[in-house]
Length: 88
Picture 1: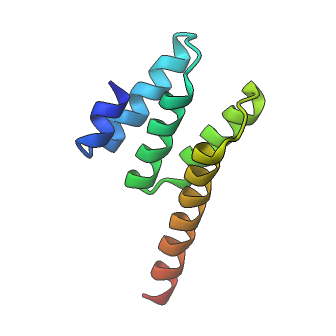
Picture 2: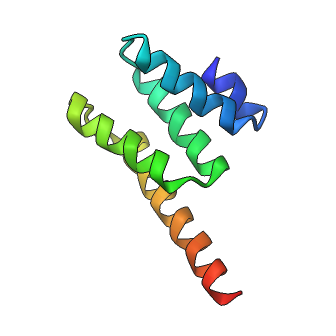
């Protein structure tokens, strides 16, 4: 469901669904974490991305190439937004 929201550019809904999943006590899969990070990228909300990153660390998710790349992309995109807004 989260991936469906993300693919259809409904980033807010994707992040809300991710939060609801966690609130219900479900442990997200590797793929679910990736979809949530993609939602953060589309929504451009660094605080949510940092929260997901913190969750991954606390839950012991191993950083493979895909998750690591997604985190780098998220942090770099956030920096680009900050740089653009400071130029305006």
